[in-house]
Length: 135
Image (tube, rainbow, N blue to C red; front, side, top):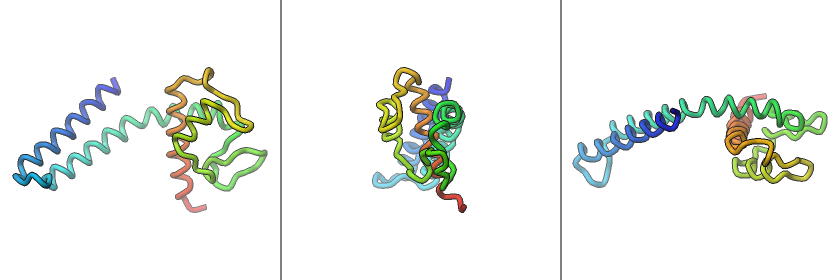
């Protein structure tokens, strides 16, 4: 169901961009209003589709990762690795969760691919959000 909604949103955004292209009459640029609508539709679809993944990623983080990791800026208590201060990329998080690290075990057989993607997306977004917040 989520994929279907995303596909419909992408199709609508593409149709809006093409319509703006043909309405403007200029092959070098897309009409500004259609372009603005396309961006708005695309952002709305992406935000709507991302909400369940964020909740799922938060759930995985709290149940599996929070024993050894924290997202509170500046909190390095009890030898917990602070992911907000480190701000690892999505790719790095996925690689570490799958392959393990220095003291981190591999979660390849313990978490599904979707759970790994969800928790990586959650950590990247949450670390960026918390890093921008004044302390």
